[in-house]
Image 1 (tube, rainbow, N blue to C red):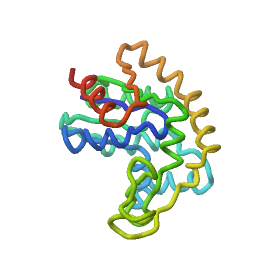
Image 2: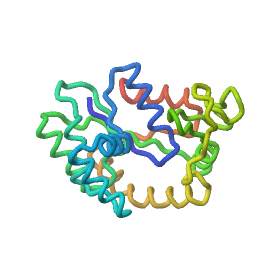
Image 3: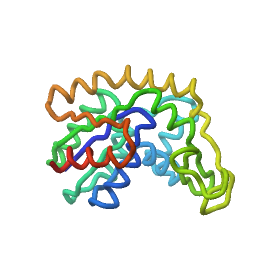
Length: 212
């Protein structure tokens, strides 16, 4: 089974992908993590990506696709693609990659939530700069005020988790993703997941859509 997770920032894609990885044997390919790892390890594609990033330019699609090709399981394992594809060009590249591997895209899950729900989730998010643990001022409070439970380091907020920035990110995301959603809807593999309720309710719906 190959599944794509689509949805704006703050809808919980990463959280749900991790749950499926730990409990149902999915191999998760999160493009953001993949890119950062390649840059840190100084792989050929990572070094090429870094050059674009340092110039403040978008990383070309062929680099992202190349990174995915490097890690995509060849043993038929269940796969979740989190954050890819982002546009129709990447969707075509994914089709080609899956054809080469004699796999198919089974489902595309679009996690959708109201803007206000997403803003509330993201503006309350706190991160540990040391271990990367994620907390929330309302939904997942640290044991000690604004200190990481593990590292005891002061938690921080991401610069792009400010409300005005989030609103712009959401607007841009919806504009760019609309053609992609229509593409997968036309293929009959798009499923909408209501990401507004608490995580436990969303998870039940997710498992129902995946496994029936």
